[in-house]
Image (cartoon, rainbow, N blue to C red; front, side, top):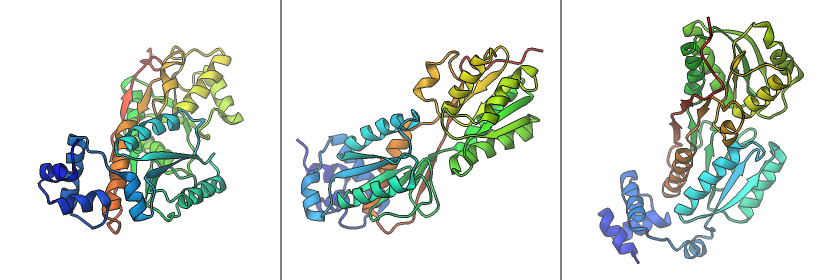
Length: 324
């Protein structure tokens, strides 16, 4: 079984420095921190987290605060984070805030009482720092460590796909503009649409849920009038809801109208037709969030870091070229 001295030797540092890195007892240069954690991974060295907790008055548990477990994107994200957390030697305490600020505050308070080492957090509303280290995920803000996908690029990719297929007139089901991620997706789409001459005939702001507004449902049912050839949804849950409305109205996808989503949740391949969508890199997001958390333990006074990861468009059967 590898020892701390083995880790120190492989990382090219002293036993004392390796101990400071793993226990968070002294600030160490970032490049040294990276070498030590790389050695830990290579040697499969297991940290004695219970002993650390006793010494530091802190558990070896990491909180995970998510806003809505009925949205399939978040259970998938939770699974990816769970794998990354276990790999780092921590256990996970999950809080579902139900998109409710009061429930979220209660959950954060409970995590503080349990003396968690920190938390990965997708906030519901305004960010207020809790009394432990956090890394914001997906919904980041200035002044806090955060990891997010490149939502602006994601919106651009939706528009580029539309243009590549010859679409000229589209309808936009934009997500809640109170959320930064939804705003960036919309801004990216509109910027690329303007550059390419893609006209947004109508737009409806809807929540990230299966419950579309009456106006949005009416817009979809009127598509047979040929005013648009593509519906752009701010996430896959909205796209699935739109697909159901179109099916009820007897409007075929993609023969009469194409449909594109965002997130690449598991449902995207289960619906008919399979959904063209923008894939968020959940595994990479989870690993980056845990890496940021571990670095924050080593550098509690360091500047906040935001990591933005690229997204990719996954073409499937819900979109097709416009027939002239």
